[in-house]
Length: 299
Image 1 (cartoon, rainbow, N blue to C red):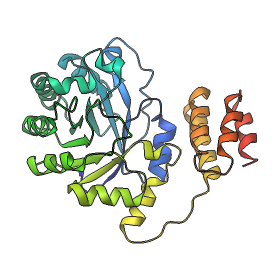
Image 2 (cartoon, rainbow, N blue to C red):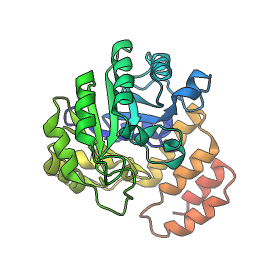
Image 3 (cartoon, rainbow, N blue to C red):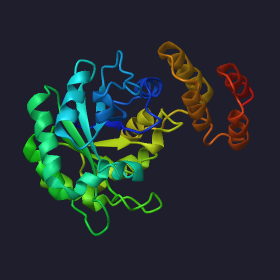
């Protein structure tokens, strides 16, 4: 798989359902990641987040710390995805409390065991998504990246903040740059990418091969095309968010997306709209897709 010059949708919990992934792909996402899927739950039979049907650019991300469970989970979706990603970056306390996600940044040997198992047993490209480190006192992205490179991963995604650093603190481009200079596989830069300018800054400041967009895509799936157009030195046309949302609804209907997820996305789509705050409040009380459509008709 080619990880060069790609604009990628980052894995996001409670965001990346199939309808949203499809919409992002329509608007230029080269690769889309699934939501974070719990490997233990998968092995026990849970398929709640496995909404994989007909996508040609989907990488499935798994969470866990047990090599056997993660390999079994990866094999269970191998015929529906183009790659498998190991989550080594989730900062949420409930995940860290289970000794998963960014917690594993403190335990290189366990990371090595999991990655080795995936590369050996799964006939797909294996990627990892890491952070700068567990906390400010343990910035070890370079050593973890080199470890994963040595075990045979196909690409490494790096979020330029440590687990304990909040989003108010700017992303640290230097750590992503150091990772890029230390490994032989493609590096995907992640963090604080909200438009073409910030995407270019990530490329220029780090030398990364591709960029990965998370929060910047929420309510703004056209960001992928916008970035591509900006990088070509051109100006992008304004996209009609109402039409974009109606397209999202068509995907939701096709793939039977739950209303609670639809309503959440509907509110995100109003970001930047005049009167958006008022519309979001009204959407809180909406009980059906028809009610959401009615509210959007007034925007």
